[in-house]
Amino acid sequence: MKFVKIFCLLLFAFPAANFAQSTPENLENIDKQLDYINQQFEKFNNYNTRFFVDQRKEELIWIADFGEARVSLKEVIFSINHDKGWLIFDCITESAKCITFTSATGKSIQYKEYSMSLTQNDKIIEHIDDVVKNFETLKNFMTN
Image (cartoon, rainbow, N blue to C red):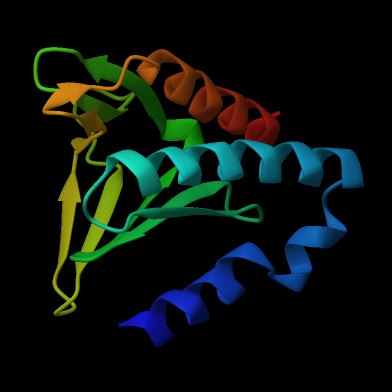
């Protein structure tokens, strides 16, 4: 599993075609947002979740212990469920299932909404709003 994560990191984080479309400043800003997001998930999520982007497809990709998910950044909004301590990824179009999850066994499922926990001592982290802002900023850099 560790080899797969390293391979995916190299595949998604450094595709040569993506660099040709981005300015160094834009790449730096994208990296900054991803670094912050990944640091928070490393500290406050129990499933070894790591985020990557495919700039060419404008997709957010995350890999965790149980599989991989992808969503077009143009089709998703980010929100918080404070009661459950979840960060929510929700498809903008009411009827669309824009999030593709592929399990570790290879089974693909489409979702309209996907949630992940960011908790400390069984409570949502106090700075969850900052995490959401970083996702929104990442989305803006990727789609504008």
